[in-house]
Length: 294
Image 1 (spheres, one colour):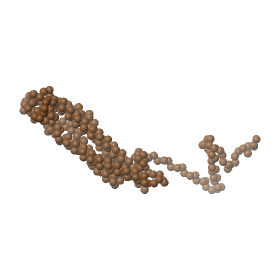
Image 2 (image 1 turned 30 degrees about the vertical axis):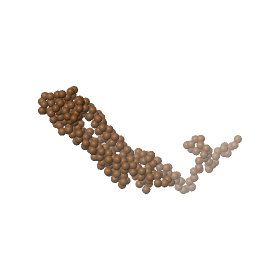
Image 3 (image 1 turned 180 degrees about the vertical axis):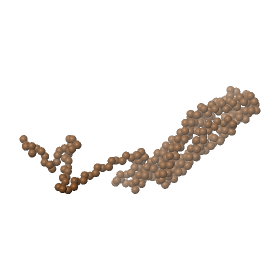
Image 4 (image 1 turned 60 degrees about the horizontal axis):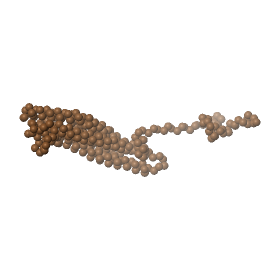
């Protein structure tokens, strides 16, 4: 049996356990003793806490556009930045063309064909055109946003890209509103136009000259004649019409198809704007990261 002085370690000898780490077999390095009468040794400062990246930076890193770590070549970073820049340019060109098509479609639907004839009447349903007005306004905004988006991508301006993202968000809300209004308000619009036709039909039966013009407009617009039969309103029917077509059914069919088309166009443009918002957010974050690297 060794004496107690032999069993206790010397002051400078390494121990088998570190304080705070139970069960560790690695010896802890001895702390330097302060010189007699001198200042205490300065311990190294702890490392700073890691900064949490915002959502755009995480998205850019997921696309390979984050800040490259030391020792890695900048070629991949620059290549990814150029790729997303050209993708945004292509999207803006497509977005500008889509805005032109939306304006042309809305103006044709509003001032051409059936809607033009019905809007000339005194009883035309104004709320029926709310979706069209929103659609045409969104198309004009799309053309302007597409142009400024190209400028922001070419100049690599974070301010312009941020404004581009905000405008895309407004367009997204407008197009979703148009699509939802077209699908939900379809039944109300159909019933309103059918009521207009029935009033014109009854006015014509009471007075042959009072509702003559309105009934002719309905028959030529929807290519139909009368309701159950066309004998009572035969003078107002189109001459090129062969057979009998119930105007109540034709009104429901034509308006339903056209409003479904408006809703599909609105929802499709809203889906397209989502990709534009993603591209602009990633490119803006990549531009900021590239300036931080420089």
